[in-house]
Structures are given as structure tokens and as C-alpha cells.
Length: 129
Image (cartoon, rainbow, N blue to C red):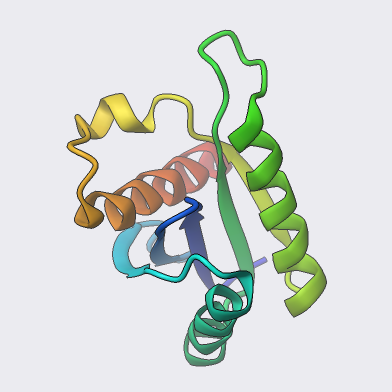
């Protein structure tokens, strides 16, 4: 698959979004979706999909340090399934368990888009090897 990739750092209050493409394999923060309600969140995502026309979607999958799942793991899997179901675009889950420590989070909204960019960059880096 070649083209634009959109990545999401899903959160209950905010969802960070990043963009990159398979040619340059460089991710960059794009925006933060501030919608908590599913209808509004997916409307905002639909606008991004119409604008960027991605070939694939990437969703960060939070896990405990030992690789086991927790409540947000389930929610992120569900979010990824909803993206695929609503938009018919291939959706890939990427382990994000260390993204917060890499970014040295302060839990600010700018960090959400940067976290999404880190997740997308990880996807690109893993797809090269």
C-alpha cells in the first residue's frame, strides 16, 4: 500500500492525529480532535479522511509494560474496528506502550498530535525492516 497514512492516538477526551506518506516515511503532527462524543469524533475524522484520502489508518495500541492489555487497549481496538467499518480503509494497530515516556508527556493537547506522529513513525520504521 502506498500513499498517505493517517495515525491516531485515541483518547477519551482528545484524539491526536498525525499524517505521513509511504514515500518519505516521515510522520508529522496534524491536529487534535477535541470531540468526546462518537458522532462528533467520527464526523471530524471523516473530514480528515476526505481531505487527505489516506491509503491506510494507524491506531496506537496502549499496553502494559509486560504486553498485556487493559481498559484503554479494548477501547483502542474498538476504535480501530470502527474506523475500518465506517470508512472501509485498512487499519493497523501499533504498540504504543513507550510513546508517553519517549515524549516525556506533560499531558498537554499538543502532545496528543505528537504522540500520534510517534506512533506513525514507529509504523514507518517497522515497515522498513
